Image (cartoon, rainbow, N blue to C red; front, side):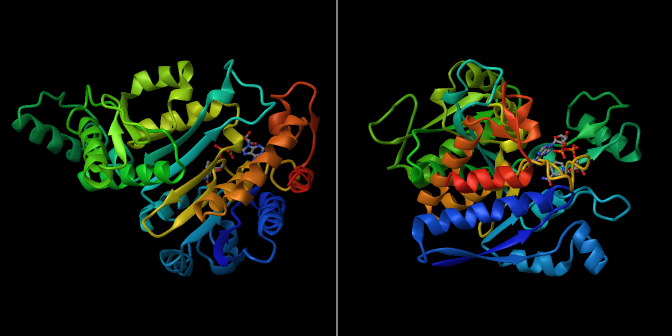
Length: 379
Ligand code: NAI
């Protein structure tokens, strides 16, 4: 089977990371499946390369192609200065309705971390990507819009200072359910033990609290015979539980092994993803994917690292692990496992790029190209 993947080089360190990462992904597939499976890589333009070749950072052709695509992967995109679009990443997420931001958090042997047992962390975070405060409905203090809203809120019985800045937090049943549905499907597919709904429903009852309820509802209505709740556990069934966000931060440190899949609204997910990635020492290594109902758009989670771009110093690990995530997504799990094991081997051997060298005592610093070659050899 051949699967087409649209790829976007990205800005800054994007080019060198791709040069190191793609051979690893292709080789993992070839080693595991011979001629049976392969990827067909088709480049799309975005970012600086697109500006140079077409005069615009996000060509319509790129958006049109992605609208009908199943798989895509991108390097980091810088935020263009002096163009109409504020952030290409946000524009892509909105235009393509990439509503689920999915981040696996896993420990690699040898990384130094701030906790005693980082190996107990093995979670996948499903973060809602389109609603909550991320919807960006905000009005500055003392503007006519903010004053108008304050008046409206007062008329509804709320007490708001007249000079308040106003931000709104829309959350819908449909938006919440489609995110939790995806998390449950993933947990069932990967045979994980539980899905935890993380919310702040004790304070924000009708947004965060509703997210929790809609999460339980979708589990009961659509996966009733395959799931159970924490209160009434049933053998062999996926447990759906919930935690208040602040308690979840404690739990992530104290009992991380009790959590596998997290489903959460946007802002909680934003905080939790980075905190957990830091907990396993792998902020720069974390892969990610943004999904719509039709497209899985994998992305390196780091930025363009302009100060080291073009110097063969960057860590291609995030893009390499995006490859593993994509392989899991298409069901080619054997090749995904090979990649993760090879990255683990390179890091455990303490041959790492400069960003990780600082975290590993006695390590040898290698460049982007060499790190890619080491992972390739370890497949
Ligand atoms: P950044 O992630 O580019 O850099 C933060 C620090 O980490 C720097 O010291 C950098 O050298 C280092 N770093 C990042 N990735 C690395 C890698 N793979 N290997 C070795 N070192 C690495 O974040 P920053 O500086 O805030 O943003 C720079 C640009 O990237 C901005 O234009 C920003 O908008 C964009 N950005 C894009 C993202 C995306 O496309 N998903 C995500 C984050 C930032």
